[in-house]
Image (tube, rainbow, N blue to C red; front, side):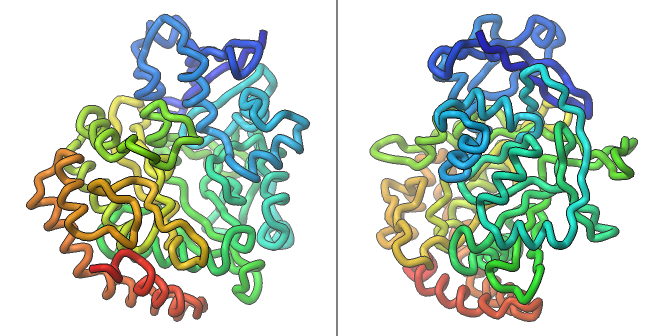
Length: 423
């Protein structure tokens, strides 16, 4: 029988949580340890409340598989380690030393952490060589990041402008995504989409473009500072680098106990009332966080981000796990500017998912589904819609001045193809 040990970092200390035991993904079950329960620690997920009984194989898989890469990245990792693509236990045992949030998965092997300095040629290779290079790095580093695009977790020393590859349980500080393995000019697109959101008052993590050449797609990377890492007041060091604390997080698919394969709303599932229900009942400031999510849903519509699925919104826990807040917005891209992209929003609004049919009136209906005041919800809609074009223009000019001229074309495409064009 296979056994995977689950740990979580609480105020900088690794704490044993429990075990996943089973012979295969079909029968593997997670159970909290007696010591974790006795210490009175909170659950590691809303979908896995504290219990002395093991959770079903389905509940176990839905949460823990949600820590893994998806799509081609997962397939490539599986090939690297000679595992079946659907064997989430084996993949997790290899990649689980450093996950999103504060969890660590161990099969009992030594996970001592370290940092390896990356040369400029290493960074250029990451930008140039595509998803095969990123999956090679995450496999070597035992690092698990969710999502389907080519990305890695790296440590950035801002004072010396140096990048390091974490190994074992050494925490990363930034998530770095490749450009040309996804879509044309997507790095400029994502940076423009994020900083415009910030200009409109939406909380985002710090992000920047890494240019290793002449700013062509194969020469740039997109770096996002991890909001689930923090620098402690009394730090420890590894190779002269401050080790950040990990903060626990879970995306809304994990919190709702929904499989990653069902992250896009289909049929009559209606994810919107479910995610607002979680915010009302579990976060420390329900009113503020519901409005943050509402603003994000409006902005996704305006900018044309139809990839706004429930794994792209998360809950962030305090360092002692005792309070939960709505996490900063991430993975915002105007997807609709690309030919052949889906026109269906990943979360339905007022009974409508097609962005071309969606109007202000659908947000009025959605306010009732979300449990929000219609007057207040539409006030937020109008404020964001009124300020959108000005913010987008200002941020596109800023990016052009920084050396990314395609920001102008992307701005025009967003205004033509995004939800803003239907107002």
